[in-house]
Figure (cartoon, rainbow, N blue to C red):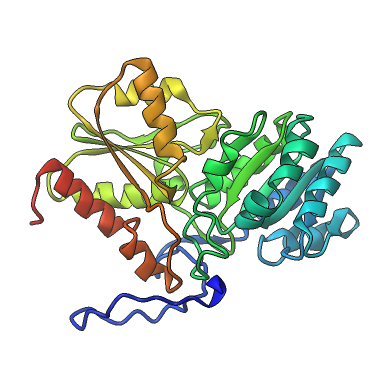
Length: 344
């Protein structure tokens, strides 16, 4: 069973042993600022202002932070049990009756198990159901049964469905009311629990459908979404020590894509463009941007940092992020290599 799969690379005796549990889904560093359950608290606050907000979960309210909403608004919380297809059908029913349902589960279960129900019951009718899913990409050590490394590829082709991939706690809490205000269905990748807080240092505000240039730079342009924006910001600071000037364009809305902002940034001459995402190299943000650039006649030097097109191992997240190239150190190393710069 993939849940039990634990394949580890041979330990390097020169490096300190990682003690992180293989099953802890945390991406926060030991000294990093965090915020507890930003989605649950944001939704509870919004529901205090809007009587049409309801919350539903498929036996995972504690693990999608919806338990915060359930405690604040128990009369508007619905536990659907371990039945994701029923969850999406119920969300569609609530939306048809004038409610704005927030349905939560794991990203693998929504994308793989409930796809047709989302497509036919929600997206085809363009209903305002909001599908909020934890454990996107490589944010769990449980292995292929729980790692949603292909969810963006699965959902990008679904008509009417908007897709949001927030970076941190600020992104999540500001996205919630804007997602609720969006007239159609939305799929949001959720970082849960103790979520890092990083974007408050960049005078950033979430805007649905808009990208944001967090820092500019003359040598490299990182275009990133989700937790990889945190990684590219860390990498940009490290690269500055090598006199490599890196820009970071954060793209929290994968669909609709902010084409104007991407083309303006990628069209600036003389920069290597690197798209970084917590998703398979197939079918995600990188391929969406590559297609946009080619269709628009913009041809920068282009690279991708993404997860490989394979089922990933189980293990501790720091180990896996290094192994699969999405840690900040791995981003720095690959950027140096692509620029032909050796490590100092």
